[in-house]
Picture (cartoon, rainbow, N blue to C red):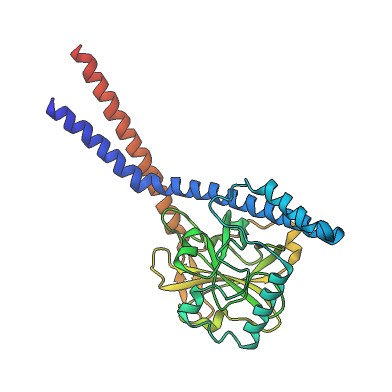
Length: 326
């Protein structure tokens, strides 16, 4: 009898460890997707309501306060999935644009400072709330967007690096958006290598959606800040993550995107052919990470299936033995 109990405990222990190691990433990713969908829906609802309020206030200035209270009562029960929603205003938009202009005038003097990169700019009305979201069809990815690449922000979505342009578009801007290459089971920018020249990237902020098109891809050193600074006359978004996969930040994989609102009305490209090697702008050839990522995903799923099968066999064997005793 003690031997049977030990076997049962061993089966349960193996299954538990297996779920933690092989099944948890899938479960974490699914949960994050649900939370993101909820947060994005709440963000869009809040933006629509604020736009209606602005229109009502303009048409009926005397009733603006009453309308605001009514909107708050109507939308107060909206679930944002744990994400605070930024309260947009024209004054905030002007402050953001002025901040972006100041970055260009100073040539991003503070960008190389690691502390500055992690912080959000000191703009009244700009707190740690969700600023919008980024959608990348070729990666099948939609992530909440926060300002300041702090550890907290990077753990809950994509983050705009401090001392880089805020994502509202405009000449002489380059918004650097960073995300983990996988974190606690959530992919984030893990599949960034699926992006190729011509693919579409969409940025939704409190005032609308901007379209960008991938122009080029590069791999750079973490300290090479000049390669991701603002370029004169251009309206850009640059995506950034670690390379290679599971490298602890040895290099930076960057995707340069230029403003192209024509992608807003057309069908988004779904990524090009995946390469085994990537050539950086300096001629260095790096091994691609995507094959390793796909092998890891397959390995996890096979192991999870094997563990479940093992548990079922243990269960059936135990019942059969129990039946023989009777």
